[in-house]
Amino acid sequence: MNTQHLSPGISIRNTIKANASLKETVQHGTNSFPIEYYDGHYPDEQFINYLHWHEEVELMYFIEGKATLQIDLNTYIVEAGDLVITPPNVLHSISSIHTYPTQTETVVLNLRLLKGDGDDIVTSKFVNPFERGELVLPVHIRYEILSGTNLAEKYNQLTTALKNKPLGYELDVKATLYAIFAELLQKKDYLATGIQNYTSTKAISTLKKVIEYINSELNHKITVQSLATLAGYSEYHFLRFFKQHTGVTVGHYIMSLRIESAMSLLLHTDLSITDIAMDCGFESDSYFIKCFKKIVLETPHQYRKKRSTLFKKR
View 1: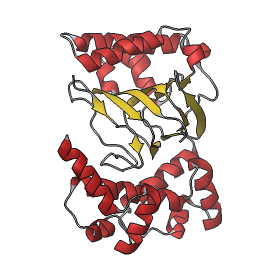
View 2 (view 1 turned 135 degrees about the vertical axis):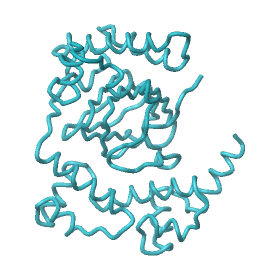
View 3 (view 1 turned 90 degrees about the vertical axis):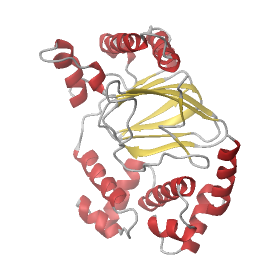
């Protein structure tokens, strides 16, 4: 069984994806079969994935827990038994409500998997419009609605095939995906809850531009003035704009990304604490250690030592 764990989410005090870029560049599956299954289990730590986007579709089923989901500028409360379908190329983030343990099953796929060659009608009529954001499907399907459909059974069939990989599972996976998307399309008015429109707006475009800049300059000094100028706002209005649409201050967002990057370097490199502090945009290693401990509740040295011991035991 080749089950992937703990991506596409972050446990802020446990593990982290190596790539903290706004636009995710992780390859899911293979070039010839671009789909992957992820099992996420976070018993006592906050599950959080900051605002980002990717070219793939993401289907996430909540087995346990409660979380706040943001897709573009719309916010949803997701609970156990709910299914979330994140379209390609839209800004989204998710964070668990800390008092709830979280367990999820996620399937991430590139729509190339569902496209045919030439004048394939499925591609031209459904897949391409969905990829461009012209065909709108339900984003958040609540448990009480999901239970009245065949979607839960089909999703279970999909994840079982991806986990166990029996002979011919690729056929089963593609057939099941077509069946899932057909039911989503046929019953979209019944399935939809809350705001389902994720069409791009000027605010979303501005937000993407700002966060992309933050990520590209993460190891350099980033000023509110430079971000406000990029967004076309005064500093005061920019700070309000960013907090309104992300739920966090710009300072907290930048700090969180820097700490994430540092966590990855601590686990996957032999760089010194001082070098990691400089590489992640901190002015000094003492300030880095102070910020790291405030967020992770451990010093960088304690974090590295504890995880290194854990990996050796495995």
